Structures are given as C-alpha cells and as structure tokens.
Length: 560
Ligand SMILES: Nc1nc2c(c(=O)[nH]1)N[C@H]1C(S)=C(S)[C@@H](COP(=O)(O)OP(=O)(O)OC[C@H]3O[C@@H](n4cnc5c(=O)[nH]c(N)nc54)[C@H](O)[C@@H]3O)O[C@H]1N2
Ligand SMILES: Nc1nc2c(c(=O)[nH]1)N[C@H]1C(S)=C(S)[C@@H](COP(=O)(O)OP(=O)(O)OC[C@H]3O[C@@H](n4cnc5c(=O)[nH]c(N)nc54)[C@H](O)[C@@H]3O)O[C@H]1N2
Ligand SMILES: [Mo]
Image (tube, rainbow, N blue to C red; front, side, top):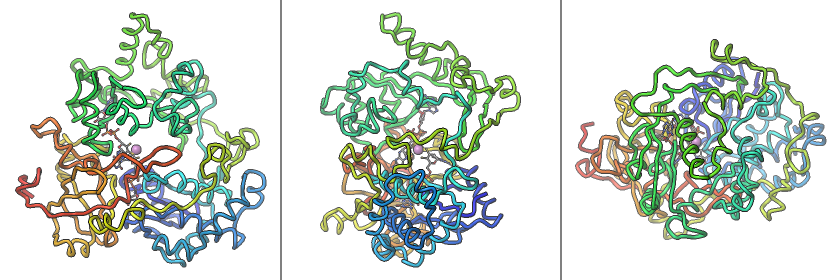
C-alpha cells in the first residue's frame, strides 16, 4: 500500500528476494521509488529518483530532507505533538544542514535532495534500509536521522508505511529471553562483559544485545586487558573470514588455551580449533520462525535425518549443559528444555498458534493491531519517539542525529595520497551467504572469482583492464586482498565496490585463502568505533589498488 519507497544503502535484489519482489510490485502499482546508493543497483535502475552520494554522507542528506519537510510545512504536526519528543531541538539541528550544505557534503545535487524530500513527504512512505548506512562508525547517528524522518512525517504503523515489530501475544523472541531475569547471570558477572563500560547500550546488563564488543574481545585475548580470555566456544560464525583484520583474529584464536568450534564444514576458523563439533545443516532440522514484517509464523520441516555424528545446535548445547551440571555447575538453569520442540513450544507461549496446523500448512497468520501507540506507547524514558534521546544524553552522547565526517575525510593528506580510492565491502550476491557455499560446485560455477567493481576511468588511470587480478590495500591493516576486476559505469570514479566472505575450501594451506582472497584481511577492526554500538567502518575506507600478474595471484592459475 506504499506510495513511496525510500531505499537507502540496501541492495534488495541480492540481499532479500522477498523484499525485492514486494518493491517491484509496488513500482508496478505506481509507487514512487527513491534510492540513495553510491552504486546503481537494480533498485536504483528501477527508481524514479536515484541519489548517488559519496560514501558515509547519508546523514547530511537525511537532515536536509528533514529541514525541507519542516520548512515547507510537510510534516505531521498532530503526530509530532502527541508522539515525538524533542522536535524543536531536531528542527534546530536540521537547520544546520540545508540542501546546499548537504549537497556540498554528499556530492548529491541540491535539487535532487529537495525532490527526494517532497516525494517522501507525500506518503504513505516506507524507509527500506541496509548496511550501506549502518556498517560505519557513525551508523547509529545516520540511522537516527532517517528514523527522525519517519517520525516527523508520521509514517509509522500506518498502511503503506514502516510497521512496528508485530508478534503474536505472549510470543518470546531470543532478545526477550536474554533480558528475562530467570535466565540472567548475576549482575556483578554481567557487568564484566567486555565492552559493557565502553558501550553500555550494546553490551552488558543494560545493553540491548548484552553481547561483548567483538574487537575488544580480540584485544583482551592478545593483551590480557581488561582481563585474560583463555577459551572460546564458536558456533555459527566463521570469524577468521568474517571479522575485519584477519591476521589479528587468527593470532587471537591461536593464542587461546582452548578453542571449540561448532560447524557443518571445515572453515579457516575450525582449522584453528582444538575440538570441532560436527553440526547438522538446516535441511536436517525443524525450525519455527517469526517474520515480524510479514507478519507470519513459519515452520520449516527437517527433510533429512542427521548424518554421521552431526547434531543440532540445540542438542549440542543441552549435552554441554548436562556435562557442566554433572560437575556441579548449574548450567541447566539456563537451558531447562529437553528437546528443540519443547523449546519452540516455550517460545510460542500462549500465542494460540496450533502447532499441528502450523506443521501441516507451514505457516500461521496472527492478529495484530496497527498504530496502537495509546495502549503500548514507546519503550523510551519519555514514552515517546525520542528525536532527542534522553538515554544518549544521560550517557554524554549526542542526543540528536548529526552528520559525522566519513573516515576517509579524516585521514591525513599523506595517507590520502597513498590510498586515494574509496573501498565499499560487503555487497551481497545471490550465490553466497557470507562465507557459506564457497565449497558448492553450483555456486562456484555461477560466481567463480572474488570480484571488485570499478568505473572504466578508475581502471584506466590505474592501468587496469577487465578480469585483471589486483591487490587491494587499506592503510589500517597490514594484509591485502586479491580480487578480479569488473568494469562497470554503475559506480562513480574513485570507488571500488566488492563483496565479503571469500575463502578457498579447496586450498591445501590451513588458512584456506583467508589471507589472500578475503577482504577482511586488509581491514582494521580498530577505532574509530560507533560511540553507541562500537561498530567499526566496513565501508568508505581509503584504499589503493595494484595490478598483479595472474601467475602471482592465489587463484590466478585457474583459467579465466
Ligand atoms: N544472498 C545473500 N543475501 C544476504 C546475505 C548474503 O550474504 N547473501 N547476507 C544477509 C545479511 S546478514 C545482511 S546484514 C544483509 C545485508 O544486505 P544489505 O543491507 O543490502 O547490504 P549490502 O549489500 O552490504 O549493501 C547495500 C548497499 O549499500 C550500498 N552502500 C555502500 N556504502 C554506502 C553509503 O555510504 N551510503 C549508501 N546510501 N549506500 C551505501 C552498497 O552499494 C549496496 O548496494 O544481506 C542479507 N542477505
Ligand atoms: N568486510 C566485511 N565484513 C563483514 C560484512 C561486510 O559487509 N563486510 N558483513 C558482516 C555481517 S552483516 C555479517 S551477518 C557477518 C556474517 O558472518 P558469519 O556469521 O561468520 O557468516 P557465515 O559465513 O554465514 O558463517 C557461518 C558459519 O557457521 C557455520 N554454520 C553454518 N550453519 C550452521 C548451523 O546451523 N549451526 C552452526 N553452529 N554453525 C553453522 C559454518 O561454519 C559457517 O561458516 O559478516 C560480517 N562481516
Ligand atoms: Mo548481517
């Protein structure tokens, strides 16, 4: 029912086929599509308006759109007065970024910014977001700027707008479990979560995730600060490939006294383990999941019996808890369920969904209310949408969305002259899921090489041609990454755009390509970190490119 989809830093055609189909339907129905992306993605190709910003400058565009909407009186005053906190402060902040200022910062024309604001304000509008705006060290501020845009136009929980998370009454998701007092560790232990002091809204007892801050854990392993970390249990993640700074991550894993990895295949992470626990694949497990956007509960059937000694994550975890319990550690308290089915039933609570019917049909719809703010309010200190965040303010952080100079702008002139290009990583491709499926013949046939997209002008000025092998380096880590050149006019001159997750399951060496074809080998996981979440920049990095002879490339001997 949307009238306008504003797609920002999201490539739905590769990353989310279901969302992509919905967006194409919307377009066919006559909805306006506005895309903000440095690359001309399939979404940008179908868009009515495409804004091509310099990476990491989206918050300036969002603030300018807010400014235009307020000055042209296109905002929803009734909604703001009832449900928003800090509108006056936001108005003043946005006034610092009129379209001419945002145009200068982002490289997008003033007219296009004004046009985008007017199209979005017509509504009902939906904001479709992705890692193109949050995988930065200023990601939270950028997101807050776009969320403020949603709020001041009242495009929330109305047909055709962004919907709040919907779930059946009584349903529990895993984040809620983390915060359930019944399953929590003593406070003094939770307080010691690495990162709880630096990023209290992310890690530790008050944190949304309650999880540690990853780069600080790597540092703790290597330095013993704030305390030594000596053992690690890794499940469902291939950190030797997917964390930035491969050399440091590998060094940290090797420095542990004990490492256990649960996986369905031998990854570079698993190669470093003392013990590898074989894990079933999704085809061997049943799963109940909630799609809050649908909104619908769905059921996936197991289609194979577990093979060999493989077990599900659930069975491995309960077996470990049993052993701990036998040694006098009350681990079962945190995992009281015997079977996955028992656990699933617990999560579903008294939601009224009939398991047998769900199993039979594969899905169950549920009733939900739209715009029920009067009964549910907002889980903020003021009970409203906080354009001015009281929680950030209390922590001494900027309570209002703001523009923060992208990392490449903050480098010294010397670094910039040595690393004159801008690197975007993580562009998804349909063939792979992160580091997965690199061993699958069908996937390797469709997408045989790690690729880097560049404009023909960038290629020419660096002496490069289509299908050349190149080495990419950034100033912030000592490794490099070998990629094959794709020429395209869909990215601006000076921009290099690549994926993530490459490694070579077939390689004989234990790192299996993690140091040669993996983009994270050339990236830093260090500061600057987002002051709220501790995220590092994985896009918008200064970099340089050098041609390498095919015979010197790790995959170069494979014929093109
Ligand atoms: N097939 C497949 N699907 C996946 C995944 C997968 O690995 N494979 N991974 C899943 C996961 S976990 C995630 S998180 C999502 C991620 O999927 P998305 O959120 O779509 O993320 P990306 O593909 O990294 O980036 C989206 C777009 O951001 C653009 N971009 C880069 N820098 C900027 C910038 O500064 N500003 C703006 N406006 N745009 C920028 C890129 O050009 C790209 O087109 O995909 C999910 N879906
Ligand atoms: N440079 C750069 N780095 C990035 C990104 C980027 O855009 N750029 N994107 C980031 C994002 S958004 C994400 S989500 C991460 C993804 O990073 P990861 O979560 O590390 O990605 P996967 O490759 O999906 O790793 C899953 C691993 O889990 C194991 N596995 C598979 N299925 C199962 C299972 O059912 N159970 C268990 N126990 N194990 C299983 C396999 O060993 C597999 O290799 O990467 C991040 N890293
Ligand atoms: Mo992700």
